[in-house]
Image 1 (cartoon, rainbow, N blue to C red):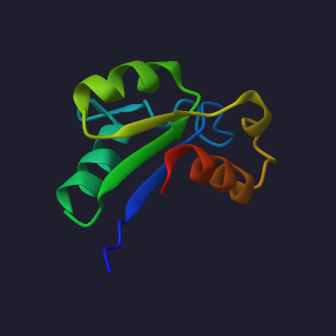
Image 2: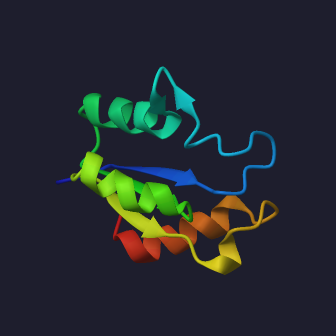
Image 3: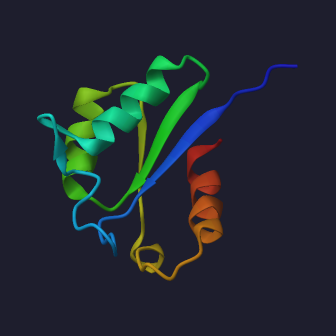
Length: 97
């Protein structure tokens, strides 16, 4: 039996606690770079999928990390009160995970 394991990384633009936290620079690199590098380097996942509505991540991440997949988060899933299960259901349908 062949099992494919994907890492799903939701990154919403409108963080309620820390503004721009996913693109905030730490030691000269955006936070999300550390997250993606860790997931890639652990050699466990067949794919790494970012679900985001952050334009800079949608533009930069495929160039920096060509092996990842970007899923554009639709407007109806952007609000902070949206349950993560709703986001995951959308991803599963789009990412073929």
